[in-house]
Length: 54
Image 1 (tube, rainbow, N blue to C red):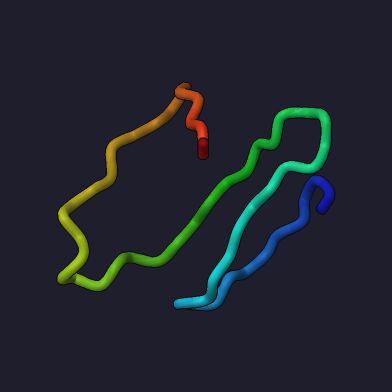
Image 2 (image 1 turned 120 degrees about the horizontal axis):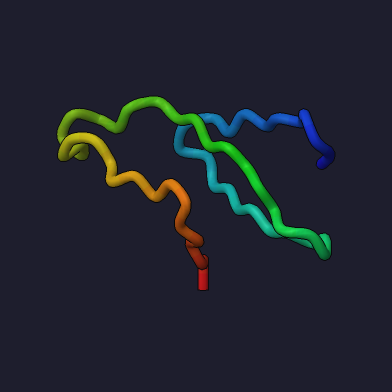
């Protein structure tokens, strides 16, 4: 992928994201609301925090 590229992942599709480059990966995730039975309200903001997948 390159800057400006986007990917739409259909509902219920398995997906994964791996940074294969040497620079930090910065990405924006936009998704539709969860089913009402799964939603507990707004998610906590992680602005300015580093999140590890490991």
